[in-house]
Length: 113
Image 1 (tube, rainbow, N blue to C red):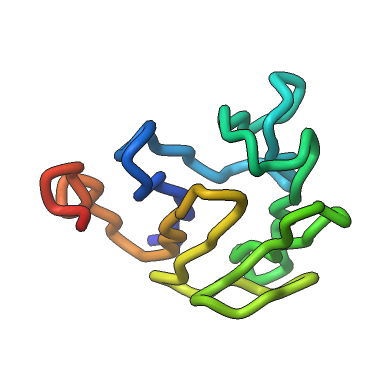
Image 2: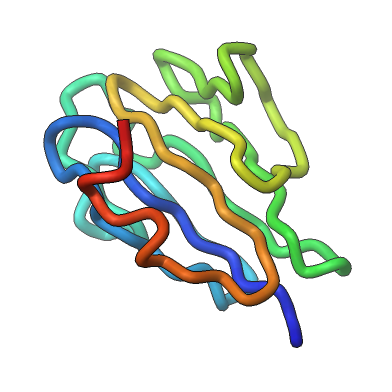
């Protein structure tokens, strides 16, 4: 069975909001024109992109955002994401999941701390 990739918002506002990643590229930022739009004043209009790699995981690319992009607390310009990485953009934290047999009930909002 193939792995599935998801992003889940961990931050209080929109906590638990899920984004299945199936396409090759996703834009992410404050603008409603993005594939993943998050209303946060600390996000750039077009903050970052998620690009599918040959292995099926995703590469996170910062698009020159004002406040930067962080993975597990470290500033990144681009990075191939790993299962359970915590992405911080603006004041928003996202959990990246990339698993076989992904059971999203495991990541119910009550379980996310």
